[in-house]
Image 1 (cartoon, rainbow, N blue to C red):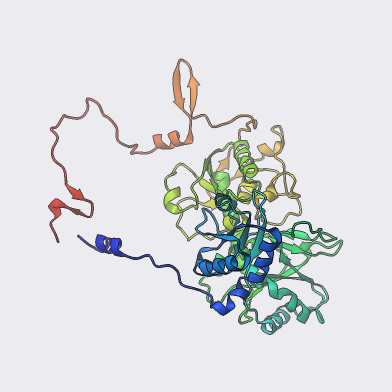
Image 2 (cartoon, rainbow, N blue to C red):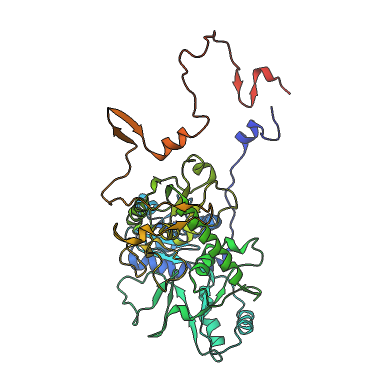
Length: 489
């Protein structure tokens, strides 16, 4: 039986899974994938086994690129695809399983340091940029030649920023060019003075200058994009940039410019709402969103300590990529916190798809740490490493006797007064589901048990002696798509 909600079983069995076709013309492969630079990287290291990591949208070119590299370098190439988490992170686990001695990452990258030492080369791509149109758009948006401005771009347009700055520098006196924070070659010395590294980029600031003094001009995006808010890299910049400075974006193909102030305001408003939801939450689900980024174990312990200090219960969930069906299995959780790279934590979620909010680690820090934020901090940090000890943005928790824990707080969502958290020492595991109560009684104290007791339907109950005994009867036969008693219609 077939209907609108089902299809023929034979059609599914006979369907052929076709491989993705070549996406890039053969004549452009060397330029698009920078094969000459990749060949030099492999030869300099003398690697015999190299992993090639492609995002899903570039897998159509993976076979041809790997064949060319094997033919030229005489090294064995392994193609990595369908990563467990985000494709922007270096898949060190997949490379280790293949026994690779180095990895080449193609496509957009978050440039987060890997959890294990592994030589990595990044090929960000080279998207065409109309320099003349972008220069005219910059001049129209920035009429003051003395105003400090930073040139930013999406990773695929970073190759054109220096050329764009060359066109603008005769008129503009205070122009700063950012560059991707690519790992330095082995044995190379760090530049002096060392540039500021933030948002996955390097900023060569002059001594005595700070990034908060500069406005921003971003080259990237596309007019054909249905929703520009879906770009996590641009969202990271808008959230972390100084609110008082102008921020504009320019399409690299058409030179169309757009003021991003309104979009930045929407993102910050959304983040403030998520912080309020986290403050109201009693049960927090910590989603493991990466296993290949450095210090993720330390960050997970930090988030657990945060929730414990704020009087909340937390569960650590390792589910791979979060989806609404996966998270719907945990109705007792009030909010989820995704521990991932900066781009993964800000990855767009379809509106209304999750039944509980999904937060970034920074929102949980702002909700649970009463000493947050420190003076002069940008409105939003995008990498969990910025919250850990050793970072200039790290804010330790106040001691238990601090008055900050007793400050009255009213929920902006419910309008109710929040009780002060019962501060617990960090050596308390806080994970016992049963509490011994005299005389020899066990009382369930876990959030899951409390949530279950509040539900009207709690599952099948034995009801021994309360229901009449009936003789067993034959049930339906067949498969769910077509039971025998349903006929052939």
